[in-house]
Image (tube, rainbow, N blue to C red; front, side):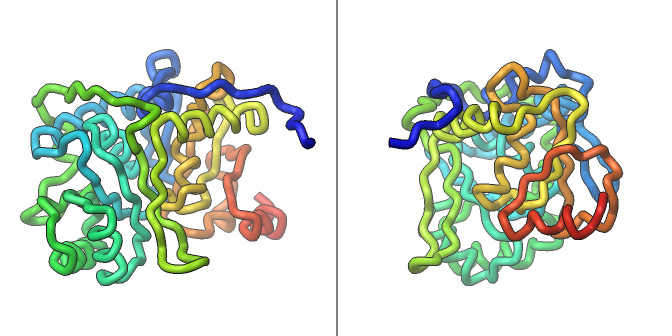
Length: 280
């Protein structure tokens, strides 16, 4: 029988937004998210405050517990805000490949019964067409701005009350990513709040991080492995809090150089050749 060299990890029974942002007050002024393209930086305090405001805006728009919200975006600092805002409002988030065709997008919308979409203006036409094909979508929000669509940026100024939702971390689904379809058509994978939070705790002894560390998020956030990129800076363990995540819409940030002091890279096996081939 094989036994891990690491100690057993107790289950983390917290909503994922609370598990990830529990240390936000302690590390309030530390960078939490950094846009690797333009350097836009959000501190832990800002991520905590902003996602609560967006959650209030989503709840005011009608997002309720049990809803599914489709998050259709490249890696930006707004992606985690939308993700945690949706889960705080009680929704499950189904993440969508930003380059999915409208037909592929529509199939995921129908299969997941998504009622809401959050996208970015460059991808808006694809999201609109997918919504038309799938039916059942109440509203399309954008992270940035677009005529005729409410934006997450506008929700930052929301005066609506923060939603108070009774979440069962063990039973309630936080994320609904879709498989690549290697053994058939893509399938939704139901991940509870507790499952994701506990998986993050499992990473802590293997990839310890803390204040001053930078995690280079190479994998796309819509992917289940890439989602760890925007969660890994705050694993539910004392030494896990306080690192900053460097994300970029570009799929190959290596040639840009180690501008933000990245110390940890999250990547698929094939992607790990990049840091070796291109010195930082």
